[in-house]
Amino acid sequence: MRSILFVCLGNICRSPTAEGLMRNHLAAAGLADRIRVDSAGTGGWHTGDPPDRRAIAAARKHGVDLSQLRARQVRKTDFSDFDLIVGMDLQNVADLRRIAPKESTARIGLWLEEALGLAREVPDPYYEDNRAFDAVFDLCDRAARAFVEKLSA
Ligand code: 4NP
Image (cartoon, rainbow, N blue to C red):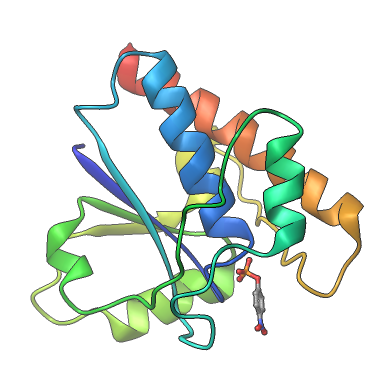
């Protein structure tokens, strides 16, 4: 596994949180040069936007800086550029499978299942309060830690 793409709906809440955490945990494990990390949305409404300020604030409390990330939409070449593409929820995974080109080489999976073996989603916090953003951060933190541990083993 040399590259991973995190995908949610808007690419401004969950997948940038997962990307930022993954970068931090990879760097802490000395693996930052080995694994390429990016994130994208199945939708394109927020293309070019920084993450939601609530996602930035939740991450900043734990020393993770998301402010430089910018949203983009999933593109066809992602399916050959990345080894692993993980959706935050089951709708994301279904959308990824639907838009994957025939020549796709990436493995597509559910993030918490890939990282923690849990058939569980990272719920969409967009219409929720700050606690939902803290919950997204905590879930993605546990997942990224476990994933990096597996990579280091
Ligand atoms: P995300 O959250 O998929 O975690 O980035 C959302 C962001 C924006 C919208 C929905 C979910 N939206 O409808 O604009």
